[in-house]
Image 1 (cartoon, helix red, strand yellow):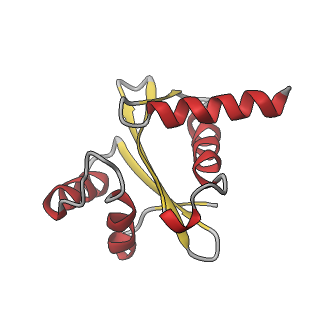
Image 2 (tube, one colour):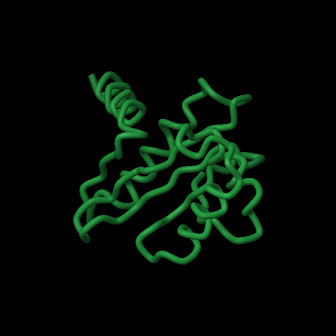
Length: 123
């Protein structure tokens, strides 16, 4: 299930975000990203929790129209289990009635694959 990021989960969130190519395990960049999630009211970070926290997904509200998925990451030990897809679907449920949910260039390929999976499941 998705839970909102809280300050006490900072190290876990940074670890998950470090798997994003644009973050490149650069601690300074990761801290800057986390601070943006903590202080910018248009940035929302969620963590996927099963027994442990296994993934992270970040959303930026853009022009009060779009909910842009800008970060998505799953612990490498738990990839291939559909966690990323479940996170995307939960974000769509959370934001889909008020905003157009979309992806940025860093998450677009994954977002497109999730849409393809959803379409296949509907048919």
